[in-house]
Length: 203
Image 1: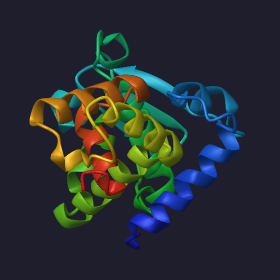
Image 2: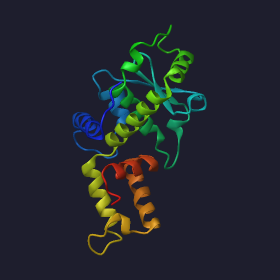
Image 3: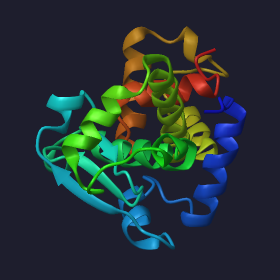
């Protein structure tokens, strides 16, 4: 499995988004894109207790045509944005790591017990790298750079006199900005923090 740089992941995410979200809508309508707009759309299938069994909120099927998500996620209320991020994360595995499934065999493409066993059989180092790349790609896909910069600057300007850096703000002000961005892009705050870091905006 070839390792990909942040620059390469960013370029791939941008190409996909320009094709399937050309208006630049925020939040990115990832569920609609995956279920309807792709030439070969995905089935999104809620399944009980994926998180309990695998410690992840979703996984992709052996045939790479379905995304299983923990059944609780679509019903999450408030500012829990794990559902759209999980869809983007699993799509990232399809884009980046399809070869992980090419040699996987099971009697049924929807045999969840075999799927769970296969995920657990992936060597730890390979699994961690795949998960890290998928997380980076999903964050880049759901938070376009131009939109992030515009909204980030607008929020920082609430606390600045002139060209004040994010690092100069108080911890409460920084948290306010990250929470606001998380709400606007519908991305969990830990991944919103990752996106701000990816673009070097903490400096």
